[in-house]
Image (cartoon, rainbow, N blue to C red; front, side, top):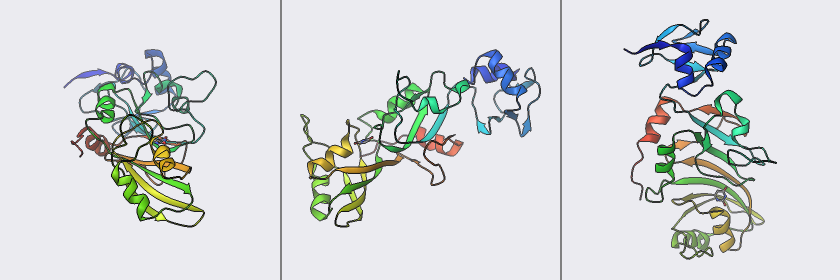
Length: 243
Ligand code: URA
C-alpha cells in the first residue's frame, strides 16, 4: 500500500501544480474509484486507486498517453509562435511536458500519440523497430497493379537510399481520383507524398489511421482526443520487432 494525498497524486501525475490540482478537485473534475472527489486532501492508495481526470484515466507514474485525431491546419510540435499546435488543443492543466510522438504534416489528419514518455516515444520511432504506420490517401489520377509493385519495390524518392518497401492497397481506382491505404515501416519526411510523387501522383488528402497496435477510432473526430485505455497502452508498450 502506498497511501498519499489526492492533490499530491494529481500533481505527480502531471495534472498541474499543487494549487492547480486543488482547483480541479473543487471544480468536480476528478473522480476516485467511481466517486467524484470533493476533498483534495483525501488519502488514496496510489497503487490501486482508479483516478479519472475529466473522465480519463490519469496515472501517478507521471506519464500521460493521449491519442488525438489531428485536424488539418495544426502543427505537430509543442510550440510555434504563429500557429496553433496539437498541444494547444489540450487543456492547459495537462499540457506541461507533453509532446507529439512523431510528426504529421500540417495538412495531414489522423492518429497522433501525444505523451510525456520519452522512452516509449523513442522506441516507437526507432528505425530499428520498423513500427508500421498506415495511412489513408486520396490521390489524383489512376492507381493500378504497377503502382502496387512500385511501392513494394522500394521507390527512389530523392534521398541517398531508396524508400523501404511499402504496401499499397488500392481502395478505389477511379479515373481522376483514387484512394488507397499505404503502410510504411519508416518515417521519412513527407514520405507518403513523396512515394506518390515518385509514381506521378499528387496526394490530395492524407490521414493516418494506425501506428503499430494503435488504431484511430471511427468516433474520434478531427480535433478530438482521449487518453489511451489500459488495453491500448499495454499493447502499445509491448512493441514487437516488426519486420
Ligand atoms: N507522410 C507524409 O507525406 N505526410 C505525413 O504527414 C505523414 C507521412
